[in-house]
Amino acid sequence: MKREKFELIYEYVHCKGTVAHVAGFAETESEAREWVRTQQERLRTEGKSEFLDDGFECPATVCPLKAGLPSFSFREAR
Image (cartoon, helix red, strand yellow):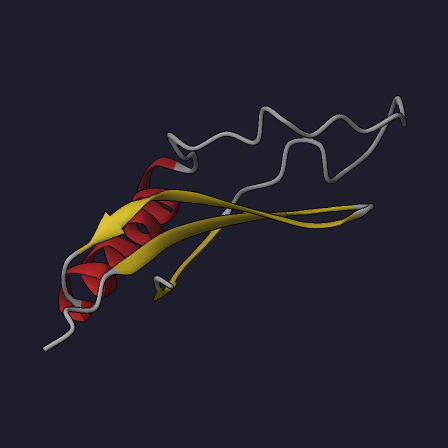
């Protein structure tokens, strides 16, 4: 029997498009859902996230999407 794993995803929306990163893996779907809930709650209460989008560089000096907040989700790992 194949055990499914789930990728924990955080995404940033930029002027050039959406950039997705994998934060880790969960063994079960319920664990993945709990991770998403926890991250969304942290954004609501603290207004910030521990996950950054270091790899993206916007050439515009003033871009409202440079300091955006991530969205969180999960998907079945392949």
